[in-house]
Figure (cartoon, rainbow, N blue to C red):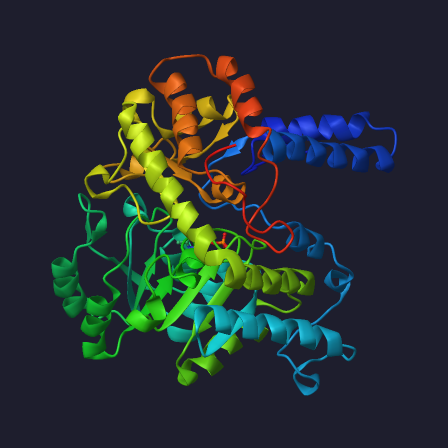
Length: 454
Ligand SMILES: *Cc1c(COP(=O)(O)O)cnc(C)c1O
């Protein structure tokens, strides 16, 4: 007799079932592989060529960076620190060249004394920071999710796994910045070992100088998790955390930084080098994809060459998109202070059906955005929050400017305010996207000839 075993999948069981049926219908493993390739091709045709991608954590990479991601060196095993005696494997002389170029390019870009290049994700960088600088039971402070905080610094992510006691950084929900007065009170009370400033919804700079002076009273440290703003930070388009009092900065290489999806960590204090790098290796990374390291190094060089103009365009586009949406009757957060100082625009779409419904409705018209928690959302609103987050990294890198943001806002408003069926707008969105297929701000294609006019 067989016992009926209950299955539990976190994934959508219907989609897994479809895949099983597809695999079962194949006559050979070769056909199964073919199905994978075809799904990849469909995505490239749709998301890569036909959609206006407004996902804030996404960036198109240059042709060279994409090519490097399949380079031969990606099949080589390298673990440990750079240099023959620091590694377990022989044969790494050229890998040492690649990795040391990456480390030195990152230091140059961030004007930092130290950098680590081996983080397969920014999330791993955050885990490295908690591993290196905290002990289970320590108190830290971080931002809660409804005001923009990220799981990596909360109880459901690395900070929670480390067994930390997590206290909220008070946030002014009208101004969308840290409430410094209340922070002073709470921080003096709980004396956090580390204050993590990491925000997935990130519109305005943090008062880093003031906060670092406060935590210095008991020797606390400021950890700037600049996952989203990393490229803006590198190119002087946002605040300069290392100079303003942050002890350590982590960030994603695939968000505004516009390189391969992975992580970066930089710091200045020599005393942190041993604990941080030890937390990377041997604790959290062994082989670390040298093809990705090469791609990261080239992305850093691209930002050195083109980043100032590129990052400025991203922010200009975000501000233009915010104004264009507001003008058409879609409420945008922080309209009283210019909407944003980053690549993000946050709309309050409660009156249009909420973030989940709106994001999926827009996707049917090839406009790709994501649902987002906004101030005022409650924990029970997690899956169906009131906000919509848009980012302008990709549209900027494809050469778009303020006039194109008007056009994008018009598409969005026709669906949300005008009530047009997404399918009726889809064809026009695809035609609008068609001439924008070149990735700029890289050595191959340099700058777009004219911004905002085609
Ligand atoms: C996206 C994000 C991360 C995680 O970055 P990955 O590179 O995807 O691991 C960490 N912190 C914040 C604030 C983020 O927004």
